[in-house]
Length: 198
Image 1 (cartoon, rainbow, N blue to C red):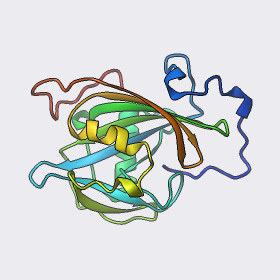
Image 2 (tube, helix red, strand yellow):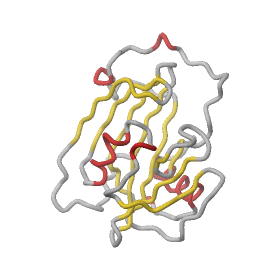
Image 3 (cartoon, rainbow, N blue to C red):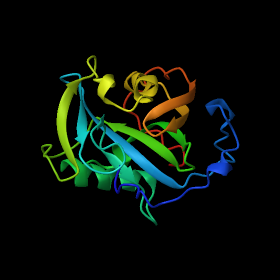
Image 4 (cartoon, rainbow, N blue to C red):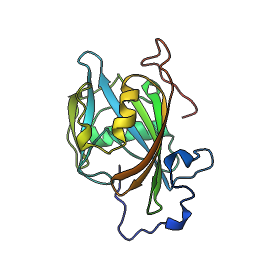
């Protein structure tokens, strides 16, 4: 996502107040950074736009377009900007569905809070940039083996329209602990933006 973490950055490893992801309390926990993911979906073909991440956190893995929220931006504004920057597609903030929330704590003390959006409306054609190489993928054939290990826990819920909240502890790219809260999908709610203050 966005810029890479410097090898010289230091985080307080003594600040980890929990050993299991279920102990992470989002209401009192504060992340070092906040970020977004934005999944563009094609209803007609049953495909979702994924990217080969070329730079930053998760370089070399497959993910959705996204990156860090800049000062003064709302999560929706960041999702619009990052989608345009990474894959050259235009999406509108009002047509984004707030699908779920992610909370990541790394064992080196770094942490990130993620807002996940999806949308079925866009303009333009996906194009490769210095940050990402986009490709359309069948929603029933997601390459989880080439993604962050947490993705297989929450992405199926996003695709099914079930709101979720995931908490994870990572050591580098290794997932050490996870905890998920998932709601049932409201009947007939697919594609309707859920603002939820985001």
